Image (cartoon, rainbow, N blue to C red; front, side, top):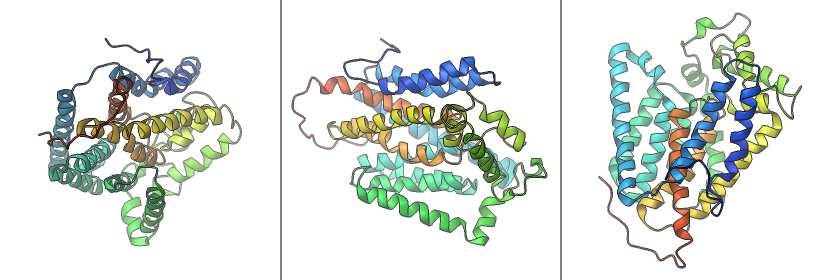
Length: 349
């Protein structure tokens, strides 16, 4: 039976309810345009996860999930090739790179769990498409997927050190003048920039972020109201009607109070999945839980320069589907006193 009420005994998704209620309530009372629409989008991934967690997932169901991931990648690649044949290199500009990054991580984790080289090849093809699309942070987020192959836990000191080193290396890479020119001076929408915005090296984003930060200081605790950031960003930069930084969006709209509630949901979910990953047996269940856990890395990375929360269909709905499936395994653990390792399973086709 599908339900939107989490199982109180297993505490599934209760940690996301404060954030969901906050965005829905403030979205319905906000005076800003599109606030209700945006509130529903922000809450949708949580609904997806709750529904998925209320279902009983069999091994064959998980096999189908893995097959759908592969089919989605093939469709994505075909669309990218079609756009290239129709529009040349500019055809890559419109591809949903967040979906590509999500699929890359799912394939790399699939390779880690099942050892099927096919998954690694598909991940490489998708990363190549992102490079051709010149999507800067998405390139970095896709490459970070290689860190998930390591045997250490996601929160190990080695992984944290490698992540910090990778960020420093990537920033240094983009500050080489010739490469910076190639990566940042993109022709898309530059003609639409107002004349007072001279920072075209990032399509005016850095200047928008600076002004957003100044306004956040005026109402730091509870923000300016749901979806207040969109008309503000649009008034500054006619090329974008979004901040392209979800942390600034949350601070501007909901303040430090909203960011704390959002962060609480993140912390509790990562903590639960991290604990769950050490208890489950069976490669298919491990694949689901490892995917749900590791997808927080590209999620948080892309939040710094993109509209991840509003483009939920490309990343968050998929991510929270995996979180929901992982949460559906929790009740079974209460019925098992001893967890005994099993032999590796065969790789799904």
